[in-house]
Length: 168
Length: 415
Image (cartoon, rainbow over all chains, first blue to last red; front, side):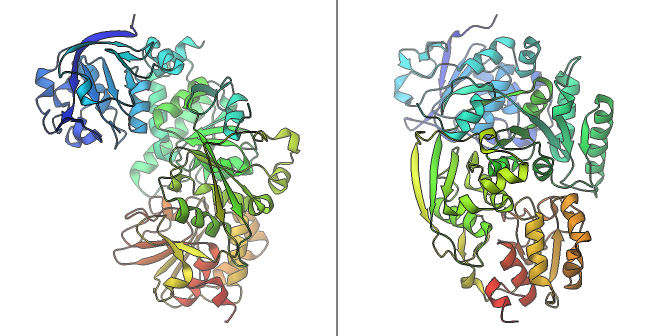
């Protein structure tokens, strides 16, 4: 059963002491790989177009979480930009805000995206192990937003269409 | 606590006691997909829909309006894939002869005040014109609505814009919408439910309301909601008590006042819809083509106004005037009332009903350096071809076709 309490290493996506904002879907999963539809092949390309983090896919471990700035996942509607993280076993993304389509795609595929409006790079050490409570909305000791009821419904069902099955 | 209009519509559709910012499940009255993305909806249903992919066939339908009849093989293939699926599942299709889906939904009385409609058309928030909820969604969410009758939605915060005064004679709903784009750009209203009120909205026709709300997408708004006035109620044969209105004590995140007193005709110059200026400043611009139609300006009233202005006049030599009525019902009226002859005799090319200029070349695209005046809603580079597109109302479009340069409707009175 999926849990609202996660523990893992936190990738702090920062540059010059600031969380990186406007990480778009081409930086997350570049359009040259869009023909890939097999989720097990997607992970290796995660962030391979994000300066400073191009080796993310080699270094990431299952259970890792990601912290970023504003407008994470802006750009196209490609589902691969969510699925590449699921492939690697990344368990959650925490960001100050999200591109609207990205947030919808992530929630619909039961991938936790948590908003933390005043997140700062200095709040955490890169790759420190932290606890994320998605029920109360706490990352480490800092306040984040909790999952909405809708997000929990889909998260526990394992996806949007899996949730539809529970409605019968 | 008073509720805004969008909150009341969502609450009436199973959203619970929600307010701006809450994420809720809501019931959808009309679940639609068009030929663009519709095939992906079918694909999702085949993959994830299980044994019962359609919640309620009577509330679920397809509308073909982007490329009608299909003039590319991928579109033809997608449309026919949808047809085969719809036949199997007993779903209604408004096929290639019907016209723009959002207009059909209004015309058929499905999208009446207070209802909820979703689909794959990014201008489905046009339903705000009748005080109803509408929203364009992706193929996954649309397929989910087909299967479950629901979508999840973050209730937007509401703002209110009061329009002060009345525009000058010869100024249309399109010009009022362009005045909104000029004032607010594409960021101020981003993500908001925008309730607009004032003397102008109180007297606007259904056609005016449709034109006005259709530009909400270009303002970045979730929806532009107009409280149904008497004209709109009459169009649906409804009484005021049957529609949904905001509470008198509703609170808004922000209130704006926009003075439209004596507003003159405006246009949006390339490269985006909020690059808005008075038409009179562009009179030197030569025009190669004019498009009249789209979900923004394709109603019977729009077409009848164009026909009235063109009657006894001629399109300038070397100018293409392309006219696409929004729906087959509009087409039928124009035909039987003789207005089609006025358009045709003036030199217009009239096509079958559909999205026309905005979609993949139903009535032709613009070439590099070609200058077009269009009554549609988007002039981004490449949207309607390689040329430069100026967005304007019917009067400006007709006058520009007659003079072969950008012109105001008032200049027509001189010829």
